[in-house]
Length: 189
Image (cartoon, rainbow, N blue to C red):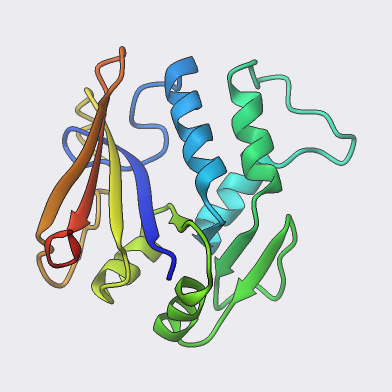
């Protein structure tokens, strides 16, 4: 059974808007690229899928956008080639190496987790909340940025029940950000 990992950037006050933290640097891009390359597949809700596709999909001409620096290209290549599952009740179809997931969320994700492999990676805000409420997330990875945003969507806002976590790893970045990796306490070994 492959684990489901929720990974996201977050500010000290819990904001998880993609523009609220520190701008990515070479070190953080390398960290996220390695994480992306370890995932068997990515699991996104519609909003995150569309946001990631607009930013990281290689153009039809095979070129990357002008804004993309040398440090972003390996991440873009990793996400571009990754297999993606998109949970949506409104989309009629997806491409970009993706499959649409519809129907009962618990059953669909349990089926994906039951497949062999190293793990599934989920990002975003709304879908991870639903997955956490269902007890389907096996690992939480938060890259905490030394920034207080003061506004924006917050991490797992609206969670129905408290989840006790156990720290299993941490990594400090030169920027002052810290990656913290947790497992639910009952699943920790």
